[in-house]
Length: 265
Ligand code: NAD
Image 1 (cartoon, rainbow, N blue to C red):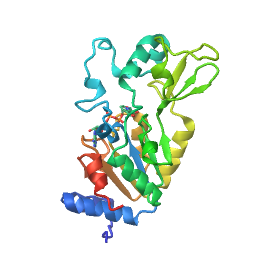
Image 2: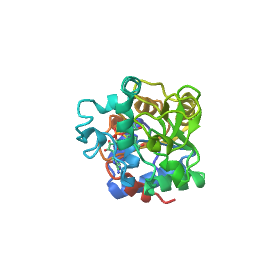
Image 3: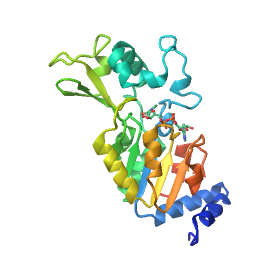
Image 4: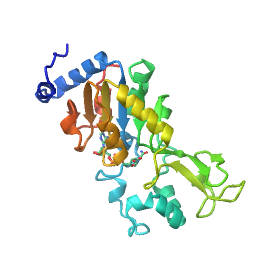
């Protein structure tokens, strides 16, 4: 049984005193007690599926490539780049964000199982790889869109996951109207998809356990969502440090799949 805490400070002091095994037990107790669990994740959830994240030592930010060396990754994935240098944008996108053949890992699968067993209200993800859905999750809010979808910027015809990667020419063009087809992802400099963001806010506001995993929280929208949470327990599972750790009850600096595998569901 989780003790009753008289203050947030006392609660944090208690959780900080736990060893790794006790922390896993506490996480399982929180999951059992909570009625509305939400997971907020990022690229680190998919590194064990072979998709590099941005900021880790093998992340896209550290990748050396002469073709793109003079641009920052934020620029290569920005609306400005798509608009002004579309050939560079699509070359970078095709070479670095093709996640069509990736498979879900144990973290994706555990989250799907939690949802199926009625223990997870939803996943809010910054990832664009579609792996939560491939693992079986249904209630997934993609706040940065999906690399598996694309659409024409003019007639808005939607295209599937292969269109951009398999179309001939530097810039993919719509077979119907001839204008550019772009990925349905939120680029730097663009607004988040409104419906996904509003649903994410509603989920976070209603949650009594928020699990944040595999994200540096460096992207403003994710950090903002984290700060909107005022529920009972906050758990962070991330290899590297994140800015929200001071607010968290439990922090695991570990592989996400290892911690998720230790959940008794
Ligand atoms: P990030 O690269 O800034 O941070 C990833 C974090 O995950 C790091 O702090 C790292 O320590 C941690 N991490 C890496 N592997 C882990 C593991 N196995 N277990 C636990 N933690 C692990 O990524 P971000 O915060 O998601 O923000 C970057 C942006 O990049 C997002 O907007 C996202 O859309 C995009 N992105 C997506 C993908 C994808 O769809 N898979 C891949 C790369 C980038």
